[in-house]
Length: 160
Length: 206
Image 1 (cartoon, rainbow over the protein chains, first blue to last red):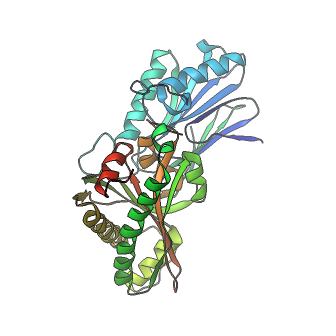
Image 2: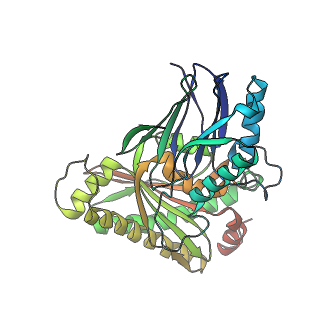
Image 3: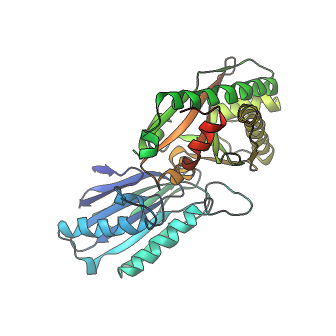
């Protein structure tokens, strides 16, 4: 099966039967949006919670708020219906343990919070998540079955 | 590329390279003493690369590495990351702890603290040299360790650069111990907003 790779701070939209994948998510979050009827899937690999304080943001895929809007737009162009979209998310780890959590160290947690807040804003149902922890994740989404596979170092693969 | 990084001229890049040279020179000496072996250091490189290119250069997002990470505060704020392939970290532990181990096992608490201590010693030496160069005080945090995919480890220091653009600046020095082939990268990743302060501290580089 053909796999479409999504880099850090990047997003892609595909149709069945393609597989969407992003590798080595740490504090970043992988956001899947999916139209199960049309089998259209989008994946964004976001790094940061919001673009509010960023002037002339060129890369919409980098921030939770702008990436979700961009995914919806790109998916609608391919024929997806916003009302049908569901979401699965993974990532948002705290890779390094530090005493006294600064904003920088909480970046993973903040990313997850921001993704959830923005999904709610667009009434998109979050149907599965694998977030937090202190380890990296590689994810693969099958646009035919709607299954999300999560690989970690030392903990094997799971499916959500 | 963020304008701030694009605007750096060759004098400023040379100055950053010199920071790497002086800091890493001291750190290499400290590592040689710790391992009781000769440690070679490559000429530091100042890399301004896109996030994805940085990760590719380090073996791709899923490459499993040992990362020892510290935040630096004080005169200049930034990140220090000591990165080595897992099998090299195992060899380093063989030298430090004087025993052979299976490279596939997870690190036990003693091995983890030995690796953290290496991070501490290298960082201390690096910052001490930087401190005498700039007359500033640097305060490293307690080091933290992760054994994981390089993409996941780098997401932490790179995310701060994300607010400014899709590129980051890393002062990269590669170390190598010849006999056991222990190789590692020592990165200083200064915060984006400190370049002016840094350049004026090292003699008004313009």
